[in-house]
Amino acid sequence: MRRAVILLPLLLGGCSCERHPAADAPGAAATAATAGAEATGSTNAATVAPLAPAPLSAVAAGAEDEGIVVRHYLNALARGDHAAADAFWSGGRTASHADDAVLRQLLSQPEPSRVLSLRMDTEVPIARDQAQPSRLREVPVRIRVMTADGPLRYQGGYRLQPRPDASGWEIHGASVQPVLD
Image 1 (cartoon, rainbow, N blue to C red):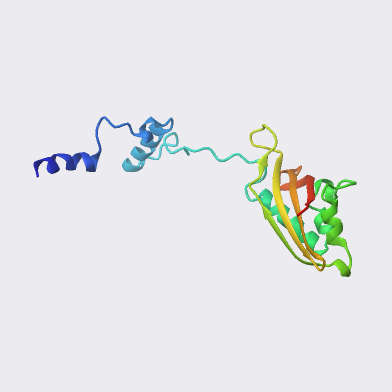
Image 2: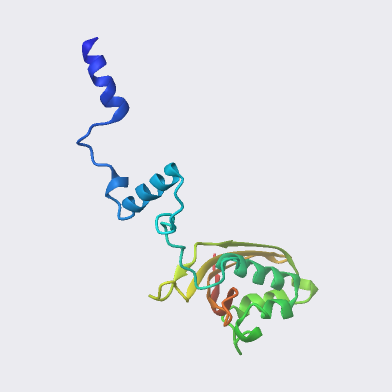
């Protein structure tokens, strides 16, 4: 019973020789100063400064992420709204020969091989440059299109860059190919 009583304070309070990661962190002194200022009611601007830097981003804070931009583009293609789809590209139009031309052509065909459904899976964007924050991203995609003639699969990625005004992302390239079963 005596051993339990002696060990109880150690279990509740921790050992004084134990290293505390919060105390070893570079911003620990500022955290302690901020906590002390809050306790005493002091509002010194030097001690109440934010501790963590804001996350770096190449676009505005409220902009849609890269995967959402690609999804909106593919949804516009699936609806047959090529003007809206082209607006997602740099300069408001695709290159003379977009690398997703096979997919664009399929979604533009008339009734006989009409698209019954389209499923797209986007993955986490990959940085394609060394800049901080990254200004070139690639969104890997897998697309399954169900047509009247059967299912078709596509795989590849869309490369994005910030719009000139940094209000969001725009597509500047694609590499999407059919996948043979």
